[in-house]
Image 1 (tube, rainbow, N blue to C red):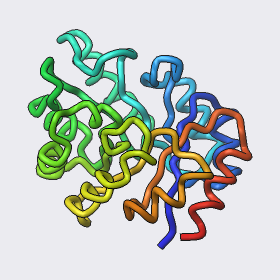
Image 2 (cartoon, rainbow, N blue to C red; image 1 turned 90 degrees about the vertical axis):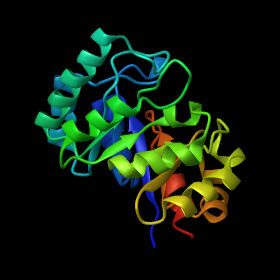
Image 3 (tube, helix red, strand yellow; image 1 turned 135 degrees about the horizontal axis):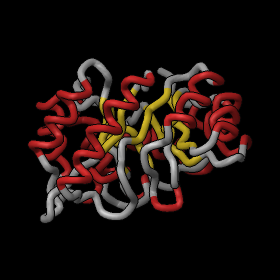
Length: 219
């Protein structure tokens, strides 16, 4: 079974480079210097016009914590509607409560508003106190995918937990390994955890993604 490489990008040039290098999907963001925010209409449309691989659109009003004010939640709903209307193949988000747990009500609402568009919970997942219990909830409400390092900050350090999440999720939810995934460690991460998807920052380095794709092709 092939391993899908999702490349995190923030420009049209990076998007085209990632596709050319063999990435199977893009995560399109703005403002990667603060961890990624919702891309503009103009950026999304330019990428959609020039690349053929699926686009996962970030839905996040700002950098920083994943605890949002009521006004920011309203912005999330507007951004969700915009990205969905523009044809995003996946919607990426994460909303937490003050205690670090997932905001169950708003997570359920996000999935409902997304409708038939698959939803990924991003690395906010790594901040929750109980990863397995949270995964159970995300499966219940219909989240399609979780991006995670296994709570370790780096996927290579969280392989054991990633393996537990993969086992727990079964065929109900995809576990995508992220967090300093590089060509030199990707194969060990995949073999040790049984993830079928990995996530890596693309930037404008075609060699980085090409080498990563080549590395996981040896599974």
